[in-house]
Amino acid sequence: MTFLHLFIVNKSGGLIHHRPLSKHAPHIGTNDWLRIGSTFHSLHAIAAEASPVKSKHKNDGIEFIEAEGLILCCFQTRTGIKFVITAEPGTRNLQKVLREIYVSYADCTLKDPFYELEMPIRCELFTQAVDDIMRQYG
Amino acid sequence: MSRSTKETSILDRNILKQRSDQVSLSAFSYIYSELVQYHQSRVSNISELEEKLASAGYGVGFKVLELLAYRSRENKRETRIMSILQFISSIAWKALFGKAADSLERSIDHADEYMIFDYNPVTSIYVSAHQSAADAYISGVIAGILEGAGFTATVSAHAVQLEEGESRRSSIGLPVKKDKAVFLVKFSPQILERDTTLER
Image (cartoon, rainbow over all chains, first blue to last red; front, top):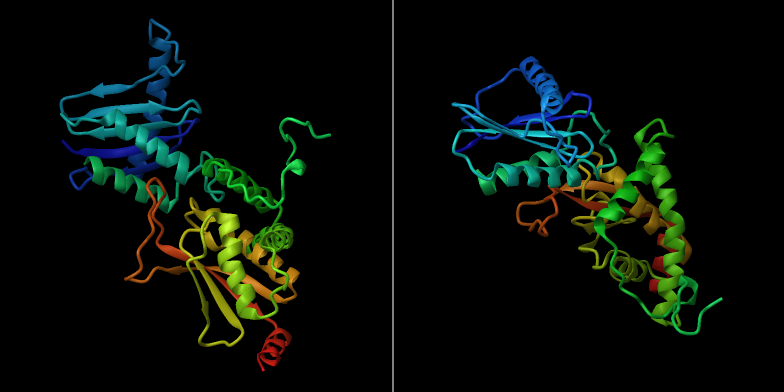
């Protein structure tokens, strides 16, 4: 019923943000995170190619993974940035939370003149905004 | 070139009427962010960036002073330090940002320093680091207004932590900031002398 992790992958597959969303979230080392980011990016691209039906949105790729121990939801923007959130099975509102995180990203990172695009996100306002979203939904 | 039915160009509008046209905050933030990034690619350190942004705001200050002084229909111009600072923190701030500045204080340690406080200046609403650098534009505007009114001063922007009791004005949808912006106005000694002479 709780959210576990959030990670954001840029257009070229590099991980630009990762964070735990609750105390239950298992700890993942930095190298593992980088591996997860690039693996997910490749799987996403392969899924888009392997799909028998081409969707109209052009945002083909993995949207939802449901496993025994976790559920994973991915939202890809038109610019190729992928917001991925993991949670314990049974958690609801994943899509909604991802959209709100996207809005906070557009506000706190894209409007910050000192943030370089596609680079790791170091904006405190973004971290705070995600905290607020978690407080609201977690 | 004005049409008889509806005024189309900005030059045809009545200068006395204060139109409160609303501009989207996102549009302003993106344009301002682009201005900051433009200068950042042409400077080598952050103080140069602040100088460039301040000079961008300087011209705005001159013009804002002229326009607001004309609109207010006052026959006398401000000659005292407190009155020009009050003009800036209430009338100019309201015209530029939609609300008066949060407070105006005189520094206790230095007699020539005054401070204008703003909890969330529009230039740094979404800025996480180097907030005072982004606010350098507003320092430039203040400096322009003061120079145009005949007061030589150096204005700098700083970020100070909010004290315990102060309410963080968190409008819905805007990020909550931990710091408030202070615009430090330091007048030159001749201006202070002139002000004390006028007091008598």
